[in-house]
Length: 102
Length: 162
Image (cartoon, rainbow over all chains, first blue to last red; front, side, top):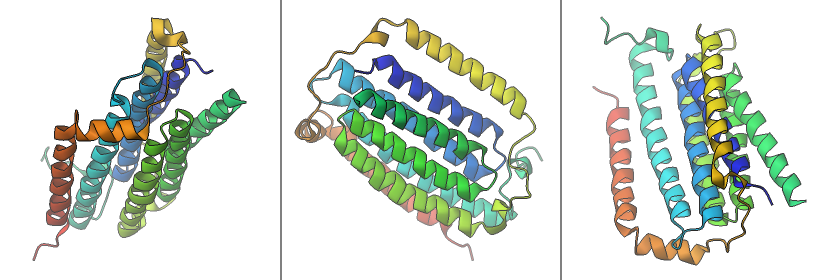
């Protein structure tokens, strides 16, 4: 059987890849993709701990469902914002979004 | 045999995740993200969370990836291969990320539950459904309000202003 630590290592790796993507991407859609990776890393932990530590009411899986629902809502709003920004600026690169500085 | 399956899914998830943040073409990134999410669904199936795996495939791969593809196609020329897709600080970012990964893995490896392999009866779907309707009824209902708010917000923001 696989030790619990391996699942947390996998989740940590996915989380760090997501952080790297969110830090380096110039494209806003790329940043959203990285955020999806981070949310999935959190979800793997929830499900793995639910299996190994055991909760009487399946708490980990229930919260995993909530995380998926929140991620869906977040990405819908994020993508609509991206399309609204694109209509306004004709660009999606973070270097160009300096409205708050001007 | 069971270990081999786990290592295979993990390898797939890691490789696809790295590809989905490093590829130049943003459309390819979305497709690699779909493969990563499928691998994560495989992890859920491995952990006896079959319902969550099915939801992952339905909602993420079926819904969110489609939305991503739509958004990429609607914002046409940004997926151009000639445009640089990473910022200038990528070296520093790699350093910070590897440091973070090292610290997190060290903390996990030292913890008493790290070597835990105890087999417990897996949570059944009936249990999940019952706790959704009893212990977690309030967050469950609240989630529907959040989804409604996201839907209305998306329509309002996406509307073309006259």
